[in-house]
View 1: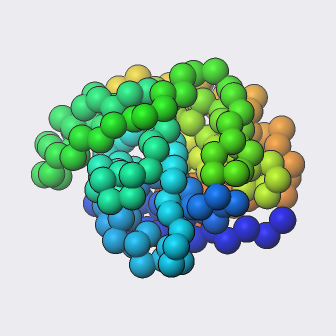
View 2: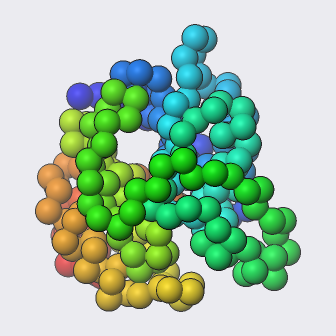
Amino acid sequence: MSRKIQVYTGGSVGCNGYLIEAADGYVAVDAPLGMADWVARRLPAGTKLTHLLLTHQHFDHVEGAAELQRRTGCTIHAVAPYSKKLTLEEAAGAWGLPPVEPYTVDDVLGTAPRKADWAGLEWQIFPIAGHATDGAAYYLPGDDELFVGDILFAGSVGRTDFPGGSMSALVRGIREHLMPLPPQTTVNSGHGPASTIGEEQLNNPYIC
């Protein structure tokens, strides 16, 4: 099925946020700074953003989460509750970046794979640590679309030098949960261009 998916790139380090057309409204994945204004300009009249899915809570992916939640009333889903430890507040401050405005994680997903129905879409959630302790990938099997944050990039994987990082855990999670997906699945990453599972199976030096 062809579903309308729009990408916004913004915030302090050029993070990708996604807006996904759903049966019962719209769903966002991650919220870089400026995401709320961008979403407001793209929602058709009479529609709502009902859910925000966080792939992890490093500052660049959540700089716009509080504003988006405040303006739309969306439910925020994440592997773990909000905390300054997860948003890397200390590191961001040392780099001269402003603090992240606190938000509320309404639905704490936990660290076991699960399924969910959000906005009339069937999702599969794969918690994958290594880049962040609260990392998660969100898969739409009916559309062959995968949203991975910084778990997997075109030709690369996320860095693992942040607190709690582990290259072995990251690669193991990718191989176990993501590489078995259909090769035509689009990989929508937190930074940079999209790829496919098939392309990464063949050419990603970290996992092939």
